Image (cartoon, rainbow, N blue to C red; front, side, top):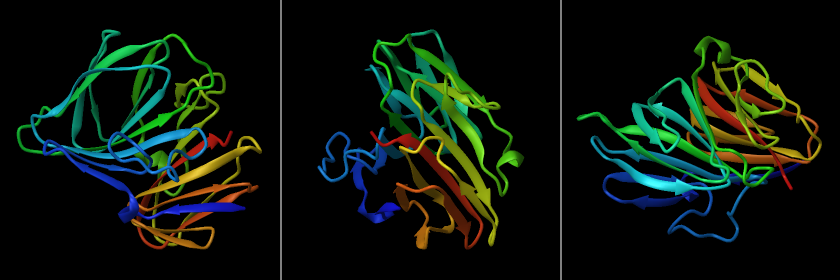
Length: 238
């Protein structure tokens, strides 16, 4: 088993006034050659958008983009004709493929929006762009893993499709509960991000916004020391 730990206070940080963003991996003005990616996971940004502010229309190409709201609602509009708000409990996926544009905006006059944005490198370039979002039943991740994203050719349950052999799981664990994962492929690794709480992963204590990457392992156990919320990204490592 190999591991790499990224503590919350070691992340890159950018304060743009309207946007405060913590970068787990190199992004924009934050560049660290030791933190470019974890396997096919390229970006994990923890963004807080101020009221009545947002990202103007901008392009993406050949990237799988996943957004997970943790607080508030974020309005989305794109060149494929989609115009919807993404709310807590929902997950949004965009396969940018051969190219698209989109914008994201916090319509609230009073409340911040906090959301995670993940970029996963696709397995094929130039695919047809795709957009989907779905609300997931919270009860189905209580003390168990809920698959919210999966490869488009291996979908399971209500999981949203992406163009990569990668999976995203969510779980809300009460203290003293645990979950165990086995990789879908021998070459896959797990990146565990602690959204809330305090957990133990393979003997490593992690707190809120800490993360750990684990690979070259047959299984992974995550146990909660108190009420916790985790997001696990399983990706090919090469």
